[in-house]
Length: 553
Image (cartoon, rainbow, N blue to C red; front, top):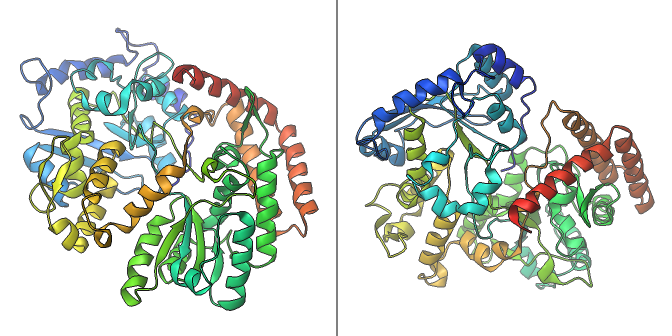
């Protein structure tokens, strides 16, 4: 799921007023009086002055997910958190955003009552909290509690360090290997009925969609998802080693040599929109692609009313649709195809999806926490093998029993026979997975899948192993390029983003020819430069070069 970046605006000033943190610390960590109190109380949870031992004493802390959409499930109601509460004596108290995350956090800042843990996007906004002295560094904990350091690795942790050299962010779904589901989902029955033609190039795809339109009047030839986001994914088809991220709304900067350049003048982006415009004019993609709700997209996929679906995670709906359709008709369901490419390009250098070592988002511990070390100890346990087994597949006994030499779970027969119960359990904990360990989970899953006969293998895992994980591009060097929302560059980025979204929609929906598409992008380039796009690109270039230095690339 893609989450929009939240901006904090007045945070540093608000912190100074509400807490008097800036410049008040008697120690070297800038955490102020609150942090001093925290340290005094922290030893209470430790065993004999050493590492904190989960389960020896009760641990309770408040947790705030900084997203409009996020509502934390009640802790202790699902099987996993119920076990953790009983066996590790951990209770997590939710703080709701109330559907307005920005306003909720601003209110907590002004009132001087921050939650103990904040789960949010990493980057410039976290730095606002850090600069205000409101976060606890983790450096003293890393060797005491070794899971994060072991599984994430120094390269990832160094990328997460702040300007003061300290680590304040605990990553979620970090990885050291490719992962992701972006790509092309194909309706198997329609494909076979049309003779299973080649779907390798963009020309092949265009010809196939025309045949679908002619024969299947109630089917969308190409579903591109909510806000036509699938068109971004398709930009990967028009250049080798070129992830869609470059010309996406989230980055809007294309590396060329040692500098970032304009997305509007990028030939790959321009060619993508010319192609998308042609498909739209020929009614080969949804005519309401920019306005349809996500539920409408899901309905089309699960009922088989799309011939091809391109998205950042088409397997999410594809797995459901495949199960439902194949249950009614063994010939129905979905397959995935190798990512399409422009004729003449090397198909093995086409990457429709991306991943980065840092994963998705982060958890930070605030100076409001009475025992930050105990909280870190819990998060470190949760990201380790035992914590991941329990939070993903429930307590030992039902779906797994025992572990192998790599600490991977030994799944029971119920894991494959009671798929309904297993999936219900996993769905109940998905919004409690704040520190997911991608490598452990994926490798455990793949190791088990490799032992199963073909007919019992997970549909999603099959396509991950055969296609999607092989076609995701490492974009770690491009993380944290976005400026703080209240900075000059942040204001420019907002303005350029608005120009981008308007031009992208107009180029696809309104242009009557290739020339008109290019004219729209040319005008967008001029408009963007007038609001300071060059300054924004200079900022992103600097951040990119800093990342390259950290990564040694």
